Amino acid sequence: MAVSRVIPSYDLYGDSSRHEESAAFNFEWIPQRSTLYNWLIHPHRHDSFIQVLYLTEGHVDVQIEHVQQTLHAPCVMLIPAGHVHGFRFSQDTNGPVVTAMQKALESAAALMMPPLLETIRTPRLLSLQSEMRYIDQLMPLFLALEQESHTPAEGQVAAGTSLLLALMVQVHRICKLSDLGDTQTHYSISRKSRQIEKFRSLIDKNFRTDHSLQSYANQVGVTVGQLSRLCREVLGKSSLQVMNDRLIQEAQRELVYTALPIKQLASELGFEDDAYFSRFFRKHIGMTPKAYRAKSLAQMGSEAQTHF
Figure 1 (cartoon, one colour):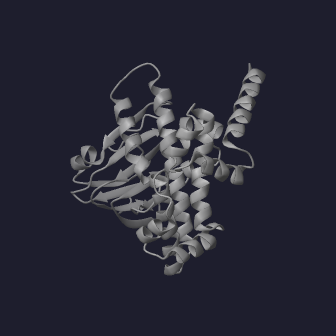
Figure 2 (cartoon, rainbow, N blue to C red):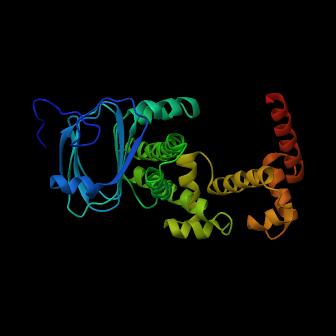
Figure 3 (cartoon, rainbow, N blue to C red):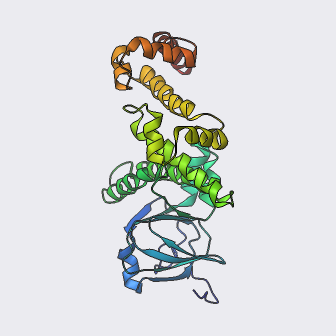
């Protein structure tokens, strides 16, 4: 992909850059613009705008600065402001693209989640794999942004920025998983990382109904013993601890943010006996579910009075 002597700068490819401090964002699907240019987007940059592209079909030859790479769907490309980039898409490519003011997004990230700033400012080419957590959350956020972009109304900038921030959080999480694999050069190690992520993804989806490590091990393709050794090696805890931590996390949320009777909560978390659930909870937290709920609600009430 050749670079011209003068790198053009656009708000959107083909549109002259206006350098306006607009907080608006743009949503479109890759074919909408790429078909106009025979699927070839020559190297250019956006001085003020960040772009996030999510390929759901097809493949792309992408250039960012001096790096060139071929990516196959599913994949995510994050192009921060100021970085020269170009694409040659296959004609079966599809997926959403969001273009937004980077400064506005950075301001929100600095307030809500400062570690997100590095992700926003760093070009990333991310190949996605089905066993990865977080990728299921990508498309709903893109579709919500599409809906918001098509419905001009009061608060659109605030709603759009909030959705963009949520999207960047998911990209940030995927970056962390990708970095974990990239830092391990030996294939067997990176495979272990993928197996662990598949296990954790399965737990996120099934922890309410499936408490069987044998079931999870079967789906990951290892024995129960191998699964526990993998968890200890990669996460520093056993597979049983990983599963129990997820149950406890959800129990704490439900106790604080819902009024579900403890017996019903135990049932919804897959415990046949609420007495066993209470013993399980106390073993991990150091108090009964009832005591934890009372303490947490009292603390929240005290903090609310302090702030008001």
